[in-house]
Amino acid sequence: MTNSYLDQVEFADNPEPRCPCVLLLDLSSSMSGEPIRQLNEGLRLFEGALQADPLAAVRVEVALITFGSQATLVQDFVTASHFRAPTLLAAGSTPMGAAINLALDQLRQRKESYRRNGISYYRPWIFLITDGEPTDEWQSAARRVQQEEASRSVAFFAVGVQGANLQKLGQISTTRTPVLLKGLNFGEMFLWLSQSLTTVSHSQVGEQVPLPPPTGWSAV
Image (tube, rainbow, N blue to C red):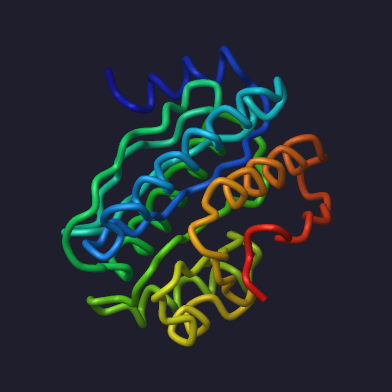
C-alpha cells in the first residue's frame, strides 16, 4: 500500500489538526556512554508524557531523525499515541547539515499530505540536540532554516549538550538563541518539550501560545 493511501486511512480515522515535531538527535561517538543512556531515558519520558494527555496523543505527531555515521530517518511521522521511543546507539561523526535538510524535506512532504487530505496543522517544530558541531556542509541547511523561520513555516529549536559549538549553532538558529543543557538533564528537557507541545495542541491553529521557560534543565 502506498503512503498516500495509508495517510487517507489515518486521517479518516483521526481528522484532528496535527502538531508535527521532528526530533533531530546527534548520535556521534562523543555521545557514547552516559549521554546516550540519559538521552534514551529522556525519550521514554517524552513518549509517556505525550501519551498521558488524550488530546496531545492524537494531535502531536513525532518524527525522529538521527545523525552519526549518516543522517537517518529512524521514525517517520506518527501520532504521539503510536510513538515508541527507540533505544539509540552512538557512533560516527556529526553530519548535521544533512540531518537538517532531511528534516525540512520530511516536513515539506508531511504538510503536502495534510493539505491533500484537508487536515489543518500547527506550525511544525524541529528540535535539534547535539554535543558537537557539523562535520559536513551546513551553511545551505542554515539558510533553509532561516527562510522557513522568516515565513513562519517552521519553529527551529537547538539544544547544545556539553561540548557543543554554541556559536555555530547560533549561526544556524538565528531566530531562537540555542540553549545549553544543564549537565545531562535530558529528562527535564524532554518533559518541557512534551509540556510545550501539549500546550500548543490544546490551542487553536494559528494562535500564539506562550511557552513555559526552560527552567530546571538549561544552563544560564
